[in-house]
Amino acid sequence: MALKRPRLLVSERSETIALCQRARYHQRAYPELSLLFAVKNEAAYRRKDLLAQGIRAGVPDLMLPVARGGFCGLFIEMKVGRGRPSPEQLLFARLVTAQGYQVCFCWGQEQGWTALLSYLAGPRTLH
Image: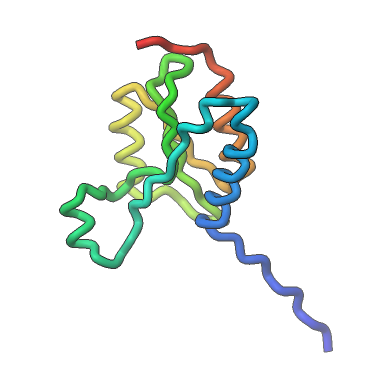
């Protein structure tokens, strides 16, 4: 009888944690990474209360409020596996892109890290 190999369960949460830990580790090389923060917007419990506090469907998981390359800041929406952006996420991305932000959809922390480094490599923008 052959044993099945256990499937590695990778979650959006674990990939987001890994990316944030990596960003904290590299803050000396990239001080702007100290401004990276998570937007906890998916909570299903207490939804009515959270809506009253301003949560909004479609807001990406991470925000880096640093101006680079003509953008005001960077939003990152983390995905895993076959996950796809929701209609609300695509709408939010279009709306904030029109306001001067960059939005990246990243499948896993490696893509997230690449997006962060690529964004920070852009020319500094003063507003």
